Image 1: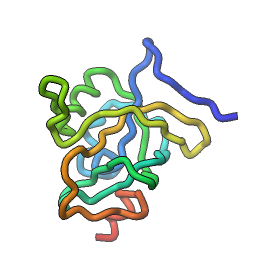
Image 2: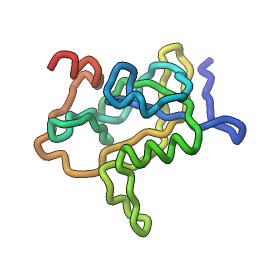
Image 3: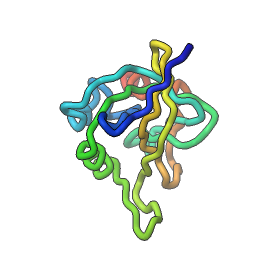
Length: 140
């Protein structure tokens, strides 16, 4: 039986990171103090090398590899800023928006986690078929 973890009022939020926030990547420091929950995948999303500058995901038919961390509300708001989540009168106008996703962890459990998806044009972007940013960037 698969156990599904859902955040409750006494614990923090979960966040799924797939690119430069992963361990060993340049912006991992932004997760300082966050509790590592595990590695996992999300289905129904495609990973891109956006403008050949940074990783981004959009809804699609693929799967994306990443990591799940438990973070508090302040860290979540900090990540919103770092990921350029911006709303004006309930319109998403930044580079990303934060959505809930179901993550299948490697050990078999599932968690509901926040994830940042890219919401701008993908012109001049390259689809990463493997869905794994760390693997992709290590081969560049």
